[in-house]
Structure formats: structure tokens, C-alpha cells
Length: 429
Ligand SMILES: Nc1nc2c(c(=O)[nH]1)N[C@H]1C(S)=C(S)[C@@H](COP(=O)(O)OP(=O)(O)OC[C@H]3O[C@@H](n4cnc5c(N)ncnc54)[C@H](O)[C@@H]3O)O[C@H]1N2
Ligand code: MOO
Image (cartoon, rainbow, N blue to C red):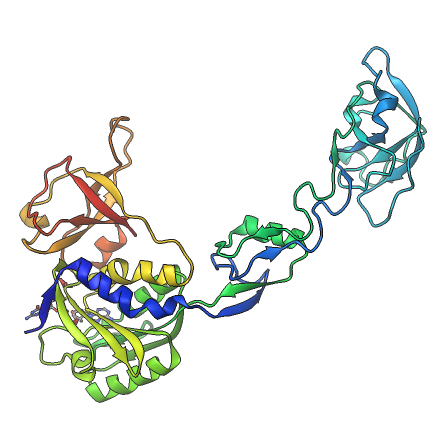
């Protein structure tokens, strides 16, 4: 008889087993190559300031604010336009008092100028002639400008370092990279970044009945669902699939496959072969692993330990059991090890009942039913928590019901029935 433990005990044992995974090596990557969702291992520091130089926030005229202070719609101030500055390489000449330069958004503001008057506030209104004359050359800069509205010193001038001072941290270590982080690093001219190396996981399916896609299953054969499912789950949790194996029900082959997996990866994950049958190859191949029954459904039969020094978790073969095992025991451990935040469990209100023959909850076991958020408009606005309804039955072979679910509804071990309106904890999928 194997030992029987509760869910929290097994979770704690898995956390302890995998504690060493959190010590991640660092790897470098180009900023533009698949870094989204990855975690920065080191701060990204700006070598120079951002903006890099004083530049215009508007298309208009760079002026000395004092020269146009008196301008008003009825009494414009007219200045000679002495140069044209585009957002282009080069350094404009200083601006003499009593003059203006035409300037474009992002162009360097000449020394001496301290404000930009948008073109709309002048007699030119716009510099852009649009599609009316696409072949025409760009507007030449005018000889003079009549400014109808003065601007305070500093208006529409972007100062260097006003976004980032040179030498400061743009993105701190631990940032989970999203597009806006890539933008900030790119603006600072960063080409390569240091990332936490993902935990590498070997995903090992066992069962002589399994075939891969593209094969016509013969009598007694089924497609391998767990391999692809767990590989996807590993990646979604920030891990990297280092090896995928599908092994037959032969303890020798399983032992050899697991030895290879242990040598190649940080963690080995198996499915199948851990129950009470005559061909429980994972159990038979791993005498050093602890096999136990966890008081939950699905996902009761579990094992944890090491193969050749590498941690191994053995999940049950039923596809829903394997996926639920990942969510409950491994997802957050993997995420934390790779620097990602855990997925928070949330409280929800049950929309229907649990306890009908179709949706029963066994006494003494925590049951993780598949559920969906109820998003109809009719719900009371004052509902204390989001509502959730059971989807499909509790059977651990019901992969399509699992695919229709948003969450796992956590029915406490003591409960065999729950009334509508009951508060439940849910695990987002
Ligand atoms: N007498 C008992 N029988 C069973 C018990 C028990 O306590 N006493 N526990 C049941 C529970 S609960 C589960 S869960 C399963 C676990 O069985 P195994 O981990 O040994 O898994 P297998 O027997 O290899 O497979 C179970 C089931 O899942 C299918 N399977 C396996 N691998 C895959 C895969 N990669 N993709 C898709 N489907 C897979 C397999 O064909 C079986 O149908 O044991 C119960 N029995
Ligand atoms: O506990 Mo098994 O994992 O029901 O299906």
C-alpha cells in the first residue's frame, strides 16, 4: 500500500524537491529575438540620456519665448525665418535673437531657442500639403512667420535626460519582458540583454498504446495527448522543453529513457504508469522515487524523487489528471524558479450546484472540477465575486471538457455537495 497524503503536503514536498531550480544561470539574447515573456537577469542601464538631445515636440518654429511673448491672435509677432531643421543628422546653428527657425518634431532645437510655436499657431497653419500634390517637392521654408500665440520658455521643448538620465536603470532585473520594455531598451540602443535561463524539462509520456499525430491508430492505440499538453504547459510557465520522449511499457526502455532525460534536463516529468495495474512501468523503473496517493481527484496517483540526481515528478496518465497535476503541483514552482510571478488563485461564487450524480465530489478528496466564468450581463453588479459554473463531468479522461474550461474549481475535501452561491477557490487555467 502506498502512503496517502493531502494536497498541501505533496505541494510542499514538490517545492522542497525543486528548490534548487530557482538558482538560474544567465544567458544572453538579442533584444529582437524571442524575448517576450522572458525575465531579465540584470538591470538594463541607459548608457546615455533619453531624449539624447534637446528636441522639438511639434512641427513649428523654434523661437526665443521672450521674442513672441506679446503675440496674440489680433496682433501677431512677425519674425524672419533663418533656417530649417528637420529630424535628421546634424547640429543646427545657434538661433540669433529676433529670429525663428522652421523645425520638425524630433529635430534638435538650436541653442538660444527655448520654445517651439506649433505651425497651427502661425500664418502657415501646416507644412504638409498632403496627397494633393504628391510629386511636388517638400515645402520650402518661408522667409518669415507671423506668430499668433506666444509660448512660455520650455514649451514644446523636450530636454535631454527628461525621460532617462544617463547611467540610470531603464528596466530592473526581474522584469518580465513585454513589448513596451523592448521599446525602452531599444530606444537606449541596447542590443543584447541578460536573461534568466529557463528551467529545462524533459516531458516523457509512457504507454505502449500511444502513437503520435500523422499515424492512423491501430486497435488499442490512442494519440499521445500528455506529451504535447505538458510541453505546452511547461512553455507557458516559462520553462523550456529540453527533450520529449514517448516510451513503451517496458521498464528497461523507461529506465534508459529517463536516464537520458535526467542527463539532458533540469527536471524530468513523466505521465502514466503509476497506478495499481500490472504494467506500471514508471513505478517499476524508479525504485528510488516515492509513489503515493494524494487526496485529490483528478491527479490522485503521484510520485516524486530523483533519477540519477535530477528531480523527477511522475504524473498519472489520464490526460486531465496530468494537466491538473501540472497546475496544482508544478506550474507555480516552475514560474517562480524562472522569475515569473505565480498564478493567483481567486475566490468565485458557484453559479450552479455540485452534488448531482453527474457532478459528484468524493468525500475525503479535494476535487478539481473544470469550470467556466459566467459572463452574462444579467448578474447582479453587487455580486461579491465573479461567478463560475461547472463545465463537463469530473472524469479524468474528458479532454474536451477541460478544453472548454477557464478554471479549476477547488471543491474542499470535506464537501460532497455545494449549493449555488457557495464561495469556492478557483485556479485560473
Ligand atoms: N485499481 C486501481 N486502478 C486505478 C487507480 C487506483 O487507485 N486503483 N487509479 C486510477 C487513477 S485515479 C488514475 S489517474 C489512473 C492513473 O493511471 P496511470 O498513471 O498508471 O496511467 P496509465 O494507466 O498509463 O493510463 C491511464 C489512462 O490514461 C491514458 N493515457 C496514458 N498516457 C496518455 C497520454 N500520453 N496521452 C493520452 N492518454 C494517455 C491511458 O491510455 C489510460 O486510459 O489509474 C486509475 N486506475
Ligand atoms: O485521480 Mo485519477 O487522476 O482520477 O483520474
